[in-house]
Image (tube, rainbow, N blue to C red; front, side):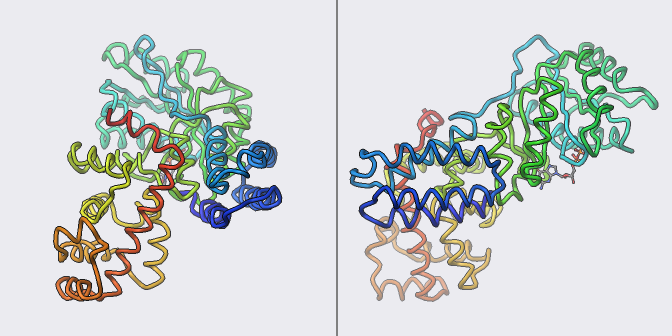
Length: 445
Ligand code: GDP
């Protein structure tokens, strides 16, 4: 997610932080680079321009330039403005408290991931919200679209409206409403038809369905890989119907991030969810602050800890989060995390979620290390004494040779692991300086 943008920005800010003093010219030069990075990421021009203006205005102030850590301050300003650009601190959730059945209407173009996202939401509503969901496909254009939703419904264990051949969308919507009431469903998800382009017929059908179903949520599904086109599609739809939010799919493959970054500013609509893969649990609430952290290469420790807590005991996750915040992250913690990484899908998935992990991963790949590296690192830490794990500084050349022999690795491997641990520690300190991980405290109260 956002890899190319993140690499660019991290480069700019590393250089900025690397210098002790900054003058106005340095800041302006860095902002020029940021602007280019944003435009290359396919961020809409006016959005990029306004962003740069806002950041520059604050960053060239004397308070920043005269401070002890000017580079750090600039990054903080960028971070805060990124969060604002992405829609503000917190994720905007679903409105599910209206009188049941609450209707969620899914709209969008064909191939955007609408049907998949419908099923993902159905699952989320059942699992996370503990509510009874029902789904109906109103797509009578695309062959087998209704059957597709029925199959997905079985996979996520959410009921779908039985298919009646030849029935038209508005009538299907009526039947779905009745059925949802009869079955006492809390939420009814309507997967409307898509077309290849925004056209009148599509809009007319969508409005007709909306007037029958009176949806509480109208969610537009767009493909993040289409960049500014996604934003244009959102503008076209929101001119026709009251969208309550956007679901950005294929964020897992989106290295640039232009759609995510421009969506809120251009359309005024919040991104409510991000689709992050083909699997039916690959959907995440869109948290602007976490996304900003990821973009700035500071990882997404909050999401990581959340994901980890699904794999490990909550107490472990609590302790880990607390130690991370206090900057007491030792090799025992690293080992726990390595094991969780293995459980959670390996290196690739996690790079970018842990601070400093991306650089470490790049360094490891350069030296030809693969995913089996997790197992080897685990073995290395396993060959250390408890004292060494708690205090890696103890590891002198002799001890390193012992650990290497014990784990069947080379001293180089030990050094790489220690370097990675250091990188992570540094990145965590940076986060702490910036005011810590908002949300972590709340998460674990
Ligand atoms: P629809 O025509 O809008 O209903 O599109 P579908 O829901 O049928 O999705 C089209 C394709 O995109 C399918 O192969 C999905 O598995 C895939 N897809 C949907 N969402 C995501 C996502 O978030 N990430 C990835 N990688 N693939 C997705």
